[in-house]
Length: 82
Image (cartoon, rainbow, N blue to C red; front, side, top):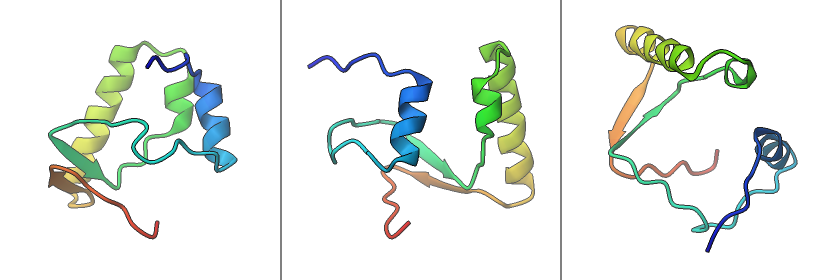
């Protein structure tokens, strides 16, 4: 199966209108999850090079980790009643 090319606008509209993908439709596999990081959508949407966005994100995670304001979990994370 090939998914259509979703734009950032498509994804934002789906999220705010509560039209979410069906459970199990997309599986994201990663070694760990970091929760409680609020990455501004304005940073993602602007024309800044990806490398600068990644550097900003790494700095944000580092600052939050040093202030003990993130939670990091190995394996799958299920957010219930959110």
